Amino acid sequence: SVLFVHVLCMVAAHALFSPLSVLLVTFCRGFIARHVTRHVREVTWLRVHLSLQVPTAAVTALGVVVPFAFLAPPSFSHFATTHSLVGAAVFVLVCFVQPALGLPDEAAAAAERRRTLRTHSVVGRLALLLAFAALLSGVALVTAEELPYGDVLPPSLAPYAWGVALLLSASCALPVLWSFVPRGGAGRGGGPTPVQ
Image (cartoon, rainbow, N blue to C red; front, side, top):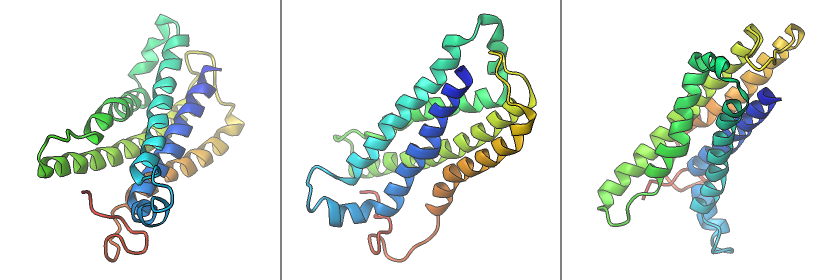
């Protein structure tokens, strides 16, 4: 059904690919540079990051398009909910803003590139936190009312849906929180390396 395709897309994008990407850049950048790139030149932290972010954007776009493709025009009032509005913000950030910020102009001054990449980092964390909010508001929506395409979660499954939502939300929020934890020397022990 439309609901399950949407849920699977968004869980894959924002509870798997995107948190892994944030964790990779935050904690494994130095490790990849020291241990992986040294042996396999083609594998850099940026390529691994991109290999997680491209599917994040693609699956997010698919998860947004599927409900539009299968809803009848009278059902579009569903898109005025908090879940839909927050989800739309995540879609715009992940599919348009982040790629634009993450690929800075090589002709720009080094200081400008650093500022752009720092903004990319902050916006990425914001998108992950908004995905957390969208996930929780989506579960609230599906457990509270019948959706326009006829899917509704049986009340007996609501506690399980909330449990899964909280676990998945933790996978969205924890990488963001961990990325602000101060660590000893940059680049030591797998800690983050400064943005170049």
